[in-house]
Amino acid sequence: MKKDWLYDVFVAHRGLHDENNGIVENTLPAFSAAIDAGYNIELDVQLTKDGKLVVFHDDNFKRVCGIDADVDSLDYDYIKKNIRFLANPDVTVYVPLFSEVAALCEGKTGMMIEIKKKGDEFYDYNVEEALLNELKNYKGDFIVKSFNPYAVDYFRIHAPSYRRGLLCYKKTLDEYKPETGEKVREILFDKDKKVEFFDYGIWLLKSPLYNEVKGTMPIFVWTVRSQKEYDDNKHLFDNMIFENFIPKEK
Image 1 (cartoon, rainbow, N blue to C red):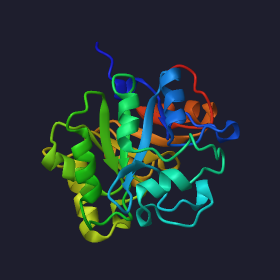
Image 2 (image 1 turned 90 degrees about the vertical axis):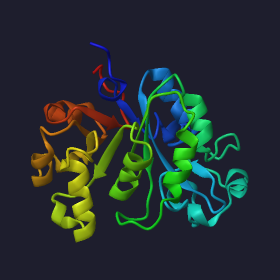
Image 3 (image 1 turned 45 degrees about the horizontal axis):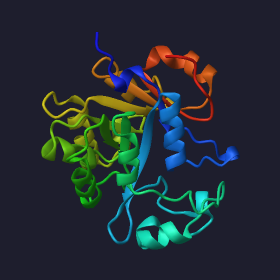
Image 4 (image 1 turned 45 degrees about the vertical axis):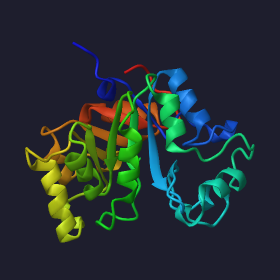
């Protein structure tokens, strides 16, 4: 049987980062380290003030850079030149454009691309449109996913060949606002609109929503942080997104 990169290879959370040794999450060195170690990578995309698609997790730079400014409040040139990481302030380590990460990964590893949105409800498709434009000519392996169901469903409509997943941290669908909960139910259980996989917080395994989804599609978990955590729970999911340890062979 042909190997499926998505389910047969572990996924390094924001790359194979190690801040104690200056390898910062969601940077080119972290992604290079994951490639060298043979892992897939998970990464996050969002837009700067001037509409550049960058790879960065938080809405704000404070946690990893010590600067209290939102990503979408600054132009990319300013970010690249002036925003430094606390774990490695070298000017060669910077917030990368998605296009740079894609060029690094193409043909070498699979990308799990998380679309960052400020909430689960619909408000615009700006990030999705920018990402679709970047992916149109991409030849490597990738999937798109988000906590926001409207972001995920955008790609069903505009790029139906793309593999899609839903991220979730809810125990039940009732925790969503009613309209959003209905959209989530649609993309989890409607046979014509459903995503390929469910991407769930590991602490939520065996929740009511987990039990409802289990058996209907593959399940990923995030974020596994030890071999013991993986070994104790691996019978409950199909693949994992990990960080802070080097897992044994899958």
